[in-house]
Length: 154
Ligand code: 4NP
Image 1 (cartoon, rainbow, N blue to C red):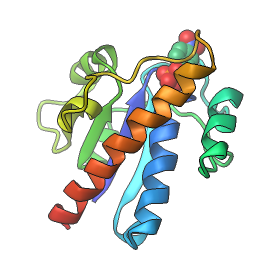
Image 2 (cartoon, rainbow, N blue to C red; image 1 turned 135 degrees about the vertical axis):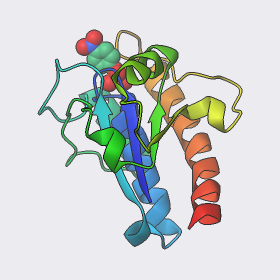
Image 3 (cartoon, rainbow, N blue to C red; image 1 turned 60 degrees about the horizontal axis):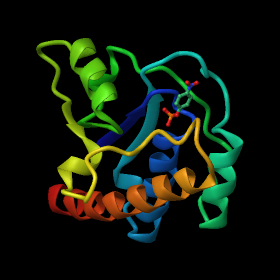
């Protein structure tokens, strides 16, 4: 199974989701059965490591994001991944526009899929430290639900 997380810059929310899911898959003994990646709808940060604030907040909870590098989502992703999960409605709308009509990939809003209290992961980029903690709180909850879905699908 192949899962792609998508946000705007691929330096805050979607790399957090990638790192958290990778960690939880390892804990569940499923790392070898699921391919995980992340990408941004925008291209401003292509090639960069995750934002330092994102890396520090994630490291405090035991997630190492240092090896990740930003890339932009591409049309071929819709042929490669089974599940493409957007962090907010704007990312989702852009992905719907990019998605070829015959694409196999399922496209959904990450938090709404698992009925969390919010539908969107708020963009933390222009805010303070609390926003990065909120991203982690939401992503951890949704990844627990995603792990259950993955176990049911494998
Ligand atoms: P992300 O956060 O989409 O969670 O990676 C952002 C990163 C950069 C920008 C906006 C959001 N930016 O405007 O550069």
